Image (cartoon, rainbow, N blue to C red; front, top):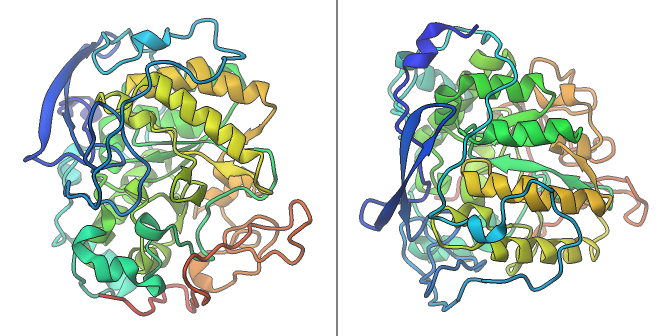
Length: 461
């Protein structure tokens, strides 16, 4: 049985990340019967992955987007109201697409099949307030800062920092799609899907876990620290069920807008709550919105966290289902499945496997995953694995305490010539399957040189 203290948390409902107080739109209320908690979620015009001006209820995949709601272009888009293809297979119990909308009435959630005792008693007062950037003056954060010796930098997004966005040596993935050799953006083997879900745990994660278990599937869950504090039993169940759990920050901010100290606090607290619950510390992380540059990258690597993105062929061909925005009315369920069909088509054009951006925060995204996307993927005969295993690594390599550093040394060690598929692997035979992750550095020809376990190189601002 879980420590009783974890049940006195204030469950104020699920957040809508990317929301600013000035741009909040109407909120949608939903009640989840299995938890008997009434939740209210606000929706903003910039929630999810976009702050581009939109007509109708759609989103765009344009890059150069700011977290503050400012735009670099005006795009008019009408969200899909029908499929552009014929569904070959669905889950027989799938919720009808027409019912998966922002205004749907929530169905009963599925209780966890079991509960386990966290490695450490979880007391909310021992952690920062949920969904707020943690303060940097605590002894824990100061210790993490001392580990990396980082210095403050100027906050900004793409439109607010055009010079930085255009600086190819900065390697700002959010603005340019640039990756370094320490980043993971695809699986090495063609036909392999690195299955990931972001932003949980949530009320609806047990629904997803039940489906994954029934179909013998495993995924990587990039979890938000605040949600781990809110749903520790669900995080524990993810880990105990054999899924990979990884870091997705404490409050889901645009990391490039934060100071070095704030970034360290975001990552450090999330690592801590995850270890306190599961007993192990993840060594992979995904930056919210894909907002990472060399400054953020260097800090994460120094803290033992390898960045994991999602596959991106071009500015308009990213492996993002856009499922997050259905809850806010900025995307439709039909549009998500159309995106998935495009992802399948694009996957056939590349010589590697792929990683897709999906979420388990909201009911709608879980319904689409279990009712449509996963049944389709299984029919396509993709090899579906957590990220660490799609890189041809054992699950033990996903955690600091169980990784022996032989097959998956920390990125900060400088050991980048690793075995097949490891983060930072250099392919010696590009045409040979399973020869390593292809390294794609957009806009720069120089590799990121790292030396020493906690080395930090040039900071750009």
